[in-house]
Image (cartoon, rainbow, N blue to C red; front, top):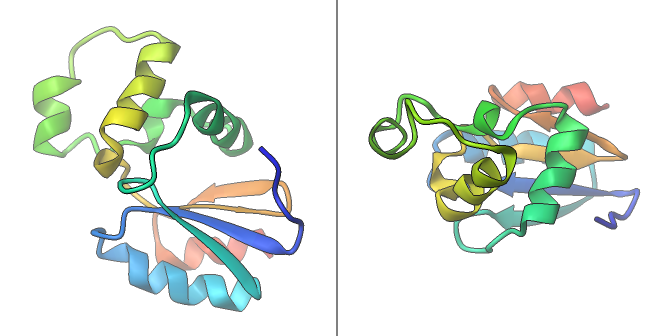
Length: 119
């Protein structure tokens, strides 16, 4: 995935309450912000793989395990890596927090101020 060094890539679900606060912090980190709403803009398995490598996380680490759809459709089953990527693609609203990429670093912003760790 090609990224511009001065641009911050902000992957989010616009319906999440944490989104507005995290986006406000993003403007203090970078001048140029490229917003990607993962619910309305479909991501590819390759894109998710690259993000996961930068985050050093597994696909299931991104998901809100308390969500009823996670409990009903995903929990308690054995999934391989490719299946987890498909879950991210097909159920992006289950992602628990915004993901930010900036200068070849990435962070899952569990709190709005987590984004400041990229500075």
